[in-house]
Length: 223
Length: 231
Image (cartoon, rainbow over all chains, first blue to last red; front, side, top):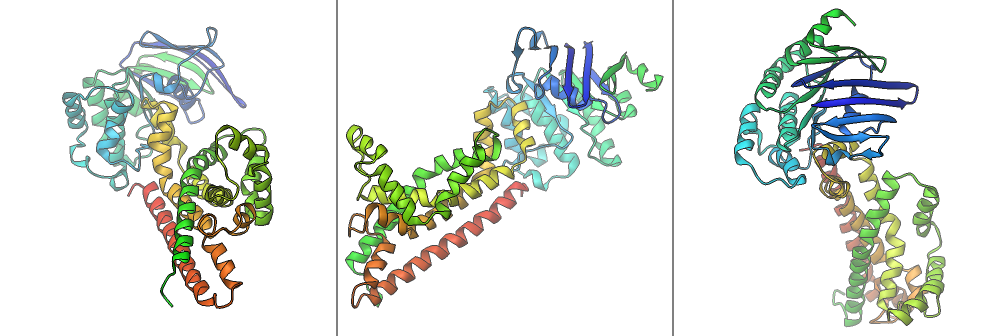
């Protein structure tokens, strides 16, 4: 479960968002500049809200009135960025293992294998990020985030940097992730078609304000 | 021509010891300062930056004299260190290492700072979302990615330290076996009749060490680029 009720002033831009989602995939939908990325970064703890609360899986990670701001690294979230941001000095195996090491989790070969099979990245393990295609990199980034055992997975336009055919290559993996990984997701996109396939709930943003909230049907209501 | 005398060997080995110790002790401070200058904004930052570069611009004899005033036996810091910790810099090889460390510090810091500035901060952000505390982000992402710059800085700092002359001779004088490095040995030999051949030998050794350091630094710089591109 995710509950967000925050306000944030970023220069001229003001962001005010309030919603509560039980959905498996909460889609944040809006044009560029609508505040989607600022909102997901606030959920991640990378941006600190001026006012309000954020509750992830029953834990209050932000509550400005109570002075609570749990730092990003203690939020137990996974974050997949538009650019995969794999660590260039580590090979794929080490990249995938990074979150487990940082969270001091014991090795879980069964989950490791499940994630690697789910994303079809078994053949890439000994390679370096620089030798991977954009689509492969993004699949590894997904795996890396999942293997840190997050309680919420944040995805900021994970297909945004890919061309059309690569998008179609990754989309089925995201659907499998939604149906099999059992981790709730927040999925940012400006592509209604993408969200129609993936999201179970939609938060529609415009100029930093939530204009609609509900099932995927709100996407057909126009912006 | 190529028979190196015991006195010359002593000077060469002392130079190496002084430069190695100076570099090893200065490196952690260099990394901390480089990180501070690359990543933090604070009051007096440009003043600190200027202070770090000062030994590069000041006449070495001034730096040496300032060291003598500060770390000499009756100096503000030197007196205290000698009385309380028994550490004496004046006219000791440790003083030569201190002078070399101070003189080479700007050259050590610069490549480290540049390599930290070149690191994509979004990678550090990604590490944080994966559960890495700030110091672990530094240890597992920032430092490994900056490592070629750190090594290049160490090589340059070492090369500068091994050739340092002005500040060293001002601060700790030119005592064979204690503070006489390659540079001060050459200086003495040039002033001695028949010292030319011995001076030439030490000159050649200096050139070899300096060239080696520069080529090494270049090699590390290329490694750095490759590393940042994930090859």
